[in-house]
Image 1 (spheres, rainbow, N blue to C red):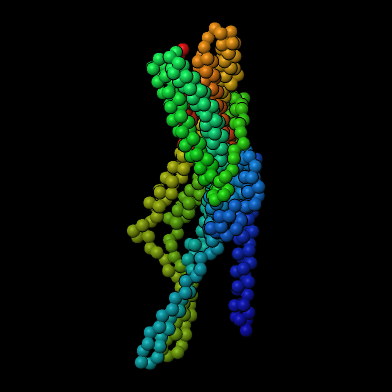
Image 2 (image 1 turned 180 degrees about the horizontal axis):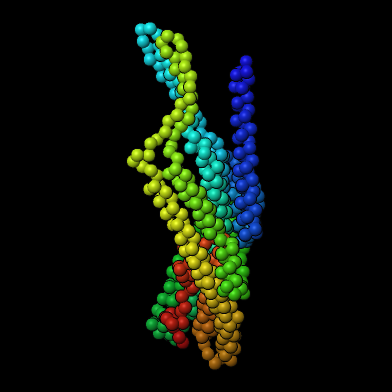
Length: 474
């Protein structure tokens, strides 16, 4: 009767255990969301829906309905991107491993029977590894360190994704601005070509002058087509990092790009902030802690041979039962455990060396990204406040001279095209400065993106002053 009651209670105990584990996983997710929010200003949404459910949420659709800003794009990604949901699932895996490490292994039950003419002989055994019981606290600490590392890795993955969204959005806004500017420049070249054609028909322009005008108009149309393809590719990158598909990809970007601000912190301040925030260093320290605990386990294993303790029962063919203790020990004749100890200690020293290497890398990244952001911000500001206004002034002065009949219409059109090119170059510099600013912000939020460290910033628009297009003068 008592055994029946125990069997009936076992499913309820399992359910309670699962519920407790679910609560711990939910607490881990809450901690990650709070950490992400503290680093990037917005928290990822909780996991929702069933696996494979790719439906776009109503909240995300509402954000996509109007002109999409950079901040709204980040919120859409944190609402619906399934890659982030997959990253959060790692917390459940790590918490389950920790729960498993906190439990003793199941005992091993053995049984065998031998049949004789006088009856059957039965042997029963129940054994448990005493080393597994002894090392439970150490294994629990190892699993705890690994769980902390997973939490840092998941946080870093989400933070990195947020800045990937920011970069992709900045690129698409800049690409659309380039398309619009090139379209205006191509229209100006078409106007110049048509004017040259009329002059040619009237006998006031030579064949080479008309051909040069046609070449310039054709080259700009080709350049416009390439820019339109680049804009399309930039939009698709945004669709990927936002997790969009179907009719949800019909969003429109709201620009222009924000004006980049040169970093005002000194180099040493940027270095210390990057080190303090680094999730990569947090993950490495968790690895060090786990390696140290493993080294401790190996030290004990050299002193204690693997073995099992338990009970054994035997029923002889005559019907009598015998019960007594059972012990099994491994004799350290060939392997005393020293190689395992050396390996564990080497792993620990290896992780410590990697931490020092990573700290140097984070410091270097802080210096590099700060100087890159500062330099590009200054270049973008110069283009916006000096170069573009000078070209605009040249257009006004050229128009005044044209009105005074001192120059021809082609000079006005040429000055206008140069103004448009200066605007395009300023827009490209603004894009590069914004990307550099995002890269530095990501590092200070705790994520080290090695792929962007020693890769040059997105190339600015090619300057055309050194290789002027063929233009027809008159």
